[in-house]
Amino acid sequence: MWRKRNSEGIWIEKVNQMEQSAEVNLHDIVIGFFSGNLLNQDNLRKVIIDVIEFADTHQDTFCSEKEVNSKEDNSTTVSLSSCFVYIRIAETIVEELGDLELSRQVYKKCEDLAVDVADLSDLADSINQHLKDEKWYDKLKTKANYMVKNCADVLAINHDINDN
Image 1 (tube, rainbow, N blue to C red):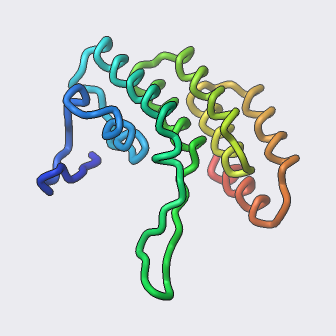
Image 2: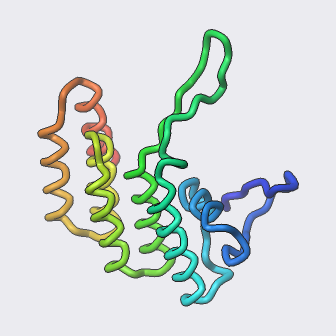
């Protein structure tokens, strides 16, 4: 069971997403903490729709590069791909709601947001795993292969293939 710290610093295992903001619910989805087992289907759908609307209007907030562990000579830059965020939302829709059509719509948005080989490869793998859509998977993997520019791209695709 995943756990996270609440605002008081106490470790918790479950939350009622109706009591949280869409931003916090989006964060929970991205880190894999989200679980709708305290909600009925209608409330769960409302929470997820609110998360999608928040993501649509705040991409610049959560998908920007941020410097973490900043030290004088050793800093790390973290970039959260908007494609990755929407992949996690689509996966949550399948896992929590079982709504393949809504998840397909979110996956289509992911495809529009994919900017590199890693995005396309991750998207293809998620679609294959959650929608079982082999045609779409093959199309995205082919598109990723055409984008390959360097050894790191080849390794990203190869790593994803080996994981499946």
